Structure formats: C-alpha cells, structure tokens
Length: 168
Picture 1 (cartoon, one colour):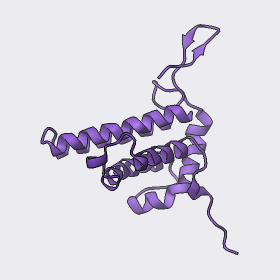
Picture 2: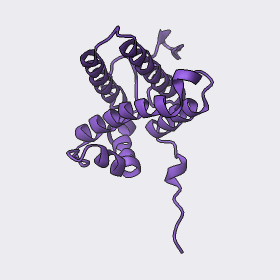
Picture 3: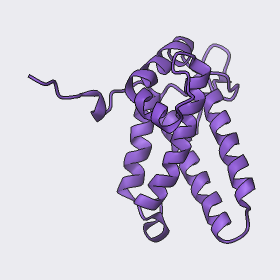
Picture 4: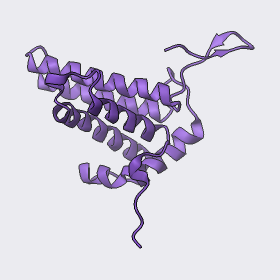
C-alpha cells in the first residue's frame, strides 16, 4: 500500500487506519490469513492449538491497530481512542455481549478486545456460510460484503443496520 508523502520533509507517512481503503486492506488480509490457517489445519499442517494462538494474536494485533497503538499505522487519535469504541458499543454492543457476556462494554479495552474476538469468530462463520471451500475468497460476494461491512464499521461510516426502522 503506497503511503502518503509529507511534502515538507519528503518523508512517507504511515497509512492511516481510519481511512476506509487502509482499513479495508487490513480486514481483507485478516480474512485471507484466517482462511490460509484454516486450510493448514484441515491439511494437518497446523495444530488446533497453533490456530487458537494465531487467532488470539490476530485479535490483539487488530485491537492495537484500530485503537491507535500500532506504530505501523497512523490514526485519528480522537476517533480511534474515543469515538470508535462508542460507535461499536452502540452498533454491535449487544452482539458482542451475546458473544462474550463477561465483556465490560463501558471499559474501552475490554470492549475492543471482545469486538475483535467476535470479528475473528465471525470470519470462521463467513468461511463456512460463503462456501469458501468451493467458491474461494476472491470474487465471492459474501466475502466482499463482510469485508466492506467491517471496514465501514471500523472507520465510522454508517452501515445498513444503523438505519433502523422506527415504529409508528
């Protein structure tokens, strides 16, 4: 991914995780890496314990990255530190609590960890539901929709579920 150039110093800037194209690339790579690990497990090249460890490492890496603690990415500190947790709490807090009832939704670190644990678990649901074993990832509309949904969600853009029908 090409990085923007700071013209005054001619230094390249880190990609901004708050930007949709950057977030989308990160999410797409997480899906691809998870798929690759699932294939290794099914081929007997990776143990379930190694898969669980890799999943935990992915959760922690995503939490750091989208919280603004990953030095390889720049971020919008107010958005990533404050607004993103609030938006996620409001939009998927209920789903996250169903996934992990021990989540403290009011504590940002607990919330963000649980959001990304939920995200990684949803990748496995996607891989099965989208029939990736037969259709693959590339050009699979369900995979593309999942990547788009999470990329929008993690950059603060509204998604369809944000527009709930009011009862009159």
